[in-house]
Length: 503
Image (cartoon, rainbow, N blue to C red; front, side, top):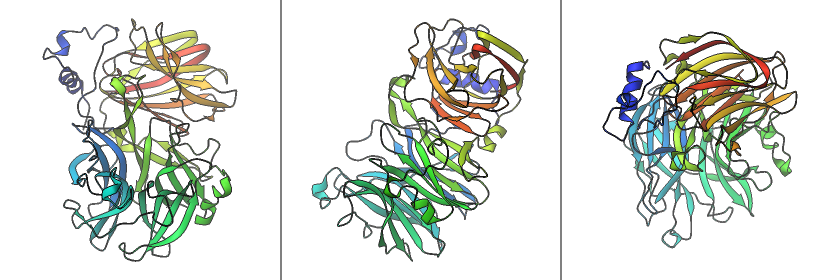
């Protein structure tokens, strides 16, 4: 698959709500801003033609030798009380997807799975087992239970049967209103283990269950406490090399990101939060991305491990609008460092999707200056290097920008003192509001040599930025497609080299 100029321009016609072709209404040779819209369907950062992707449940299928990404289908608007059936896509590489449609429908309004929440899939002796969350707003019909762990099975991953005799609840031990997001894995001793996000005596915990047959489960008590007043959604436990990891999504509004803990043993991993210890796995509290990625869970083909989460759409399809629940499916590759810490990088297959690259001549910027660059397409990949002359020189990458823009959006590589940096999202221009709260990245070390190797991938309004294998930044910025962009300097001196762009 290659992204060609003809295909991109055709997409711009399809995205227009007017029947008049966009190409007859705009001179693409100028550098003025164009109010573009997202295409109805997106491929690299997948979005179904109807609705959006919520809470991915990635699974490597040993039969088909591919990844199956189950997810909660968000129709928007959803039906009252009855929403989020499980749909799926398949992929071999995290870059190209094949839609599989609906796998597991919701129950009716009187059933415990009137609404469905996330879960996980495991394959055993010819059968696929998907454990998922049932959520009912009408507890009068469900024995006072708001949430429970449910099960469906399949022999071919196409036709699924709900086991209406199977249900695990938090009664007696845990909170029946918060009992969800089951994650099932095989332990070193061969038994099956299940983690469930819940609360005990008002404090968030991961409950643990064990089974020999995936049908009969025994409570093993609390696997791990959650620190302070936090609640860990979408838990994902795995071993990678010599380390055990717990990846989770922090629900607390002040955080609302994907994080992880690490330990050389399960007990060491559990100790990270015991008595609110806060034994973070790295220098930035285990954050894996910005708030632009949520509900991230992983799967491995035995060689590489990838994480899939969703990048939220925004209210009114406006970059400054509040984040909706659900959005586009985004995949990154996990990078494991020598100390066991994790960062995220580009899925290698994404780069292979792009065809011919155009080169931009090297340039320097000094003081408060910028270089406006030619229009992007709907789907883009740019690689380039920025070298700063000083450890506190600021630079940025502006998107959705024309030479007449009253406001535009900048990924600011901002110094936080001489030794640390982070990405800030800023609305710049005469009508811009400046720094946009809750859109910044985690802190990362300032490169000793001042060299930033940058990869930028955009699919319509979804942006993924990677720097030096130490930073991954995902976010939603509308209006990127078919518009110019820029690299900016703010009072210092930067050298930009080896810039290559493919659309």
